[in-house]
Length: 282
Image 1 (cartoon, rainbow, N blue to C red):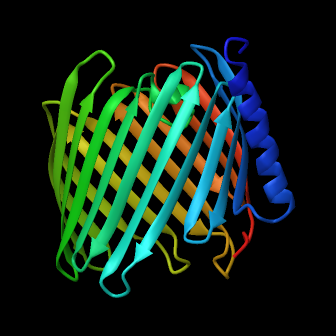
Image 2 (cartoon, helix red, strand yellow; image 1 turned 90 degrees about the horizontal axis):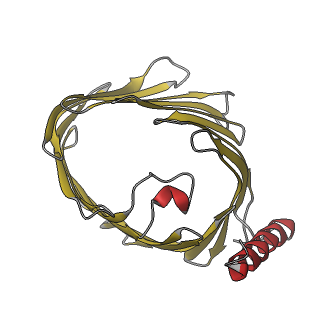
């Protein structure tokens, strides 16, 4: 840390600023966390804060050896659609990273675009990011054929820190009845797979299950269960599971502002967080 004293000072300034915003009721949300990982061993606190400023929202996040600052906003075109956008810059002892994204809807069309670049694995700049660096581009789109049928397309490109380029693409079809069924085909770095998805309510209380399976030369299961904890449906219990082969898995639990996430990807990690929500200054 002595090699970058300005980064340590910036840490202290952002942390103090976030706490003062919360104390005076200006912050929209404030998250405190503790992240630990085995092999390699790593332990860090985490802090996230958001601040609404008119049509924009500022955000900051920091961990032991990195800090990130971002902003976002949205344009509402009434019945025509909506455009959301955002950008983030991160700086740490290991390097730096930039991220920009935009998404929007226009009639039956929805699209999203994301661009990221970092000269170090992004997990070195924020523990919630993937352990990959270099350039990453993503383009997604959906077209509503009719109220109950939707076509989806996802395209991606990566150029790693080692200079290895790869691409991905996924085409899907979703049919919404009482439940939503999704079928699709995809390719990820020359690995072919099929996609099967299901989304629907399990009971009259509103318990919602979403599950997506990708199987073939790439194998990955993603599932999320959301159930209300009160009759007013103000608080929810959320469970998330992701499992993949070669072996990797993530299990997340969220309720009443608490979040816990345990992962394995060649090493075990645990991230505990508590999120405070405020009314902001609106």
